[in-house]
Length: 224
Image (cartoon, rainbow, N blue to C red; front, top):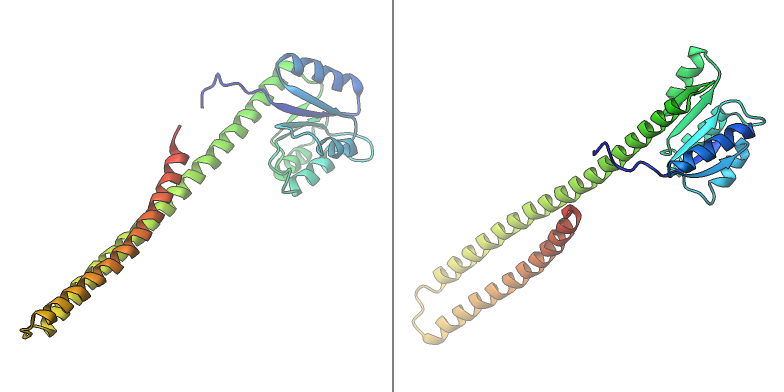
């Protein structure tokens, strides 16, 4: 990924201390981020009903519902479990930090914090998130290619079997009527063989059309 890419996006900041919330809102907005704020864990979930953040910054200690509890609920919910979370904490206990990382929280920042450090961590988390999305898109493209290859293999197998069937059928008809001397018998044989070929070709045309659709889908996916 280009290191100069634009990493601005939507950020939800949750802290019960208004001075911290206002600080983040002003600083991050100046850098081009769209910022929404919450002053409690409950308000975080209210904001998420109408706002889709690329990152959530959570204070660990909040009334009623702690940042850890909020993060735990977010990580359990399929609709929010991929949103990166940075925890703001004054807790230096190693066990607490390990618990947060095991929960799936992407990073934590110790208080008192330095905004330069915070910005670096925000950009790092967003960059990882962008790489994750690129990986998902790559995997989707690989899956389309895999399906195309599978269909192509099946098409070729069927084509081969049908071709062998045509040859076998034709040889059988020719052998059974080898002694025929009447012109109408030869004509009937020719007509039967021709009809057989027509039926097979119709079947092949249907398979070819299906392959063309898959090919167009592949081209659309891999085109820049």
